[in-house]
Amino acid sequence: MRAITFPWSFDARGGTHRSDLEPHVREMIEQLLFTDPGERVNRPDLGSGVRRLVFSPNSPEVASALQFVIQAGLERWLGDVLRVEALDVRTEDATLVIDLSYMVLASGESQTVRFERSSL
Image (cartoon, rainbow, N blue to C red; front, side, top):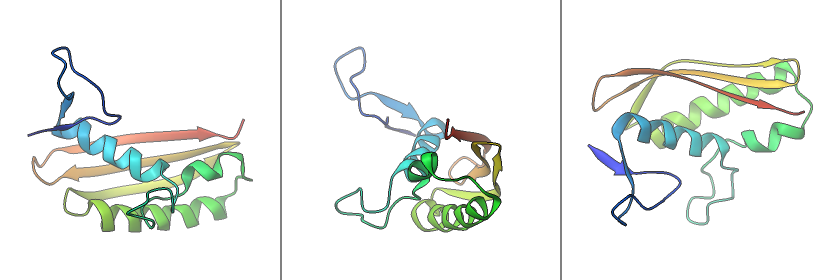
């Protein structure tokens, strides 16, 4: 299965650039994580607000609350595409670390991805 890449771009032949399923699922996760709620016009409740936390105080309480928001968002918006196997959101000094293990339902492939954002 091939899907349109994010961000949208042209391929070498001038058509819409497409990617394979696994990279596309990772792109969808990244969009969900780094979209602020209210940012999407037709989906005002899409997003986790991680991007807003870059310049906020970092604490284990914020990481715990964010883990709940991310888990709920993944199940709601991407539950038909993937199954979350493990999610860990934690703070390391001034860095927010998100470790996610998931299975792509269409292929049965397990993937692990890490996102890090620093407030520095």
